[in-house]
Length: 344
Image (cartoon, rainbow, N blue to C red; front, side):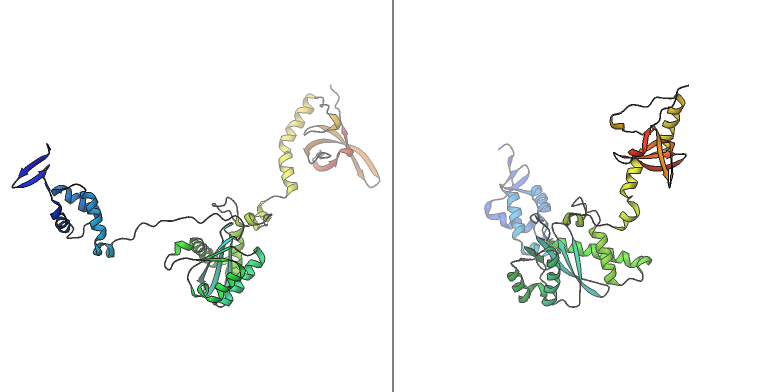
């Protein structure tokens, strides 16, 4: 009551006119004459008028305005995730795309993010069914197919095919590509990869179908951040060998050499042992270690002799790398015996 006052027969609330119920609609129409938004209209109203529930009445008035509804912005998009796929090709996303004057069908597996691209001479229902059958014969049939509302996907023949295969069909709304986002993203990835290959002189002589195969092999065997592995390793029980494996990954026997055999370190150990005439350690079962002095039985045709050698690496439990006069050899335990150096 301390905030109420009377001026020119009008009741004021902190210098704002208290509008009776009968006049509230007219006041709202007056303030909304230029179709201000809810926030601006509230700010203006708080400068001049007051009644209980003013903010709520403004919100409802603007929501009912036909002009604002027709010309206003789109509501904020709400996204929801598909249920997690539990096996390869349980749910696949399909779409057609054009590249280099040719039409392709893209099939994206929700479980592994595996992409399959098929060149399509036609986009009718029969061609679509044949392409899907070729995919399903490799990976097994799907439980759910997600696609847009294009004519091949809406055809009665395709609907009958899905019913016969016991595959559920889900369609994304028109002009709503995010509803089939996995396929849309797959198309973007494929087009981007193909454009880069076409721009690379190394692939200048390749035709588009060949470039598609090159792209698919590279994509399927490359790391996917969403998976934490490659699509191929997500599906298969083995990791396909790539050019990187051939050129960069050392062979297993070379890995063992590199890990267990460092000649520079070994030479230092040898020099130290020979300089101080250190007595070799005694081990059970004649196990040898890097730096141990040994005799190596050399056999060449009819000649047999014992040569001084040093253990420089362990290849296995029964084989060792030895240094003989600067040459590295692989020797069996049965060709070795311990060499003791006499102290001065």
